[in-house]
Image (cartoon, rainbow, N blue to C red; front, side):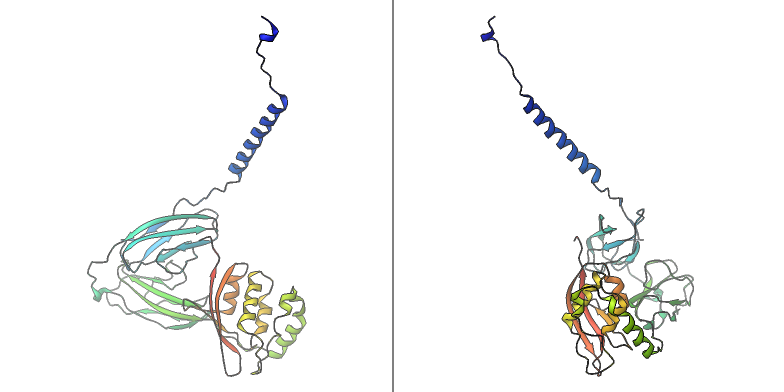
Length: 330
């Protein structure tokens, strides 16, 4: 056979090398994606309830290992809950998608069906209790069941879903201010419960040496503000009706400084009358202290919707009406 008739197959070495490099690169990229994919440890959450009826308490709990932050979304327009175990009731029948976000990374959701509460409740068996409608952080308050047929008691004072007391006349001390719901279940039957609201105000301020506090502020204030933006904020107020330097727009800058952890709470206090810090009233009518607001938003991203001041006759800010939301993935 002549060489001219022979069919030669010729592979360019550079072409083979090119495709080999492409293949290796694709394998490496796939391995990187597999190795860096975060595996969500949240498999499910536990739901505990005698029945899924409108108006009845349902307990939701998470047992995710190494979890440190929780956000519960109940799908009924209620506010977000931030504990590992929460109790919630749905006011209307229907289907609700309950979402749990753990450590701001992993999400799991379940759909539950709430049915109409058509059973007849004997109102004579409902518990009744007495107690204050107003309390202060750090000061004990006492509640008492007045039901004649009660043999056991389960008290929840609004700081979580856990049972806080099991006697007829408990005493409780709140550590966080805000609007709380006190719930009493008697005889172990969650169908028979009573609930009432209590407003917990920040701790009463003790008398302080105002002169000494002023001197301490003056000596430490200079090095606390870390950028030129906060240098443009108004000087710290004195207890004087002439003070009008802090307005809503400048307070928004202070809030942004807290969120970025660029302004300490000690320096925040300088912008308010020195003998009485204002309360903060949120959009859901919850009232918290200025210190609690600082704790809630520090190192967090928020969208500020509304700021409105209420002042006393001296021109001091007494209440801050604030509407804000956390920036989330939802």
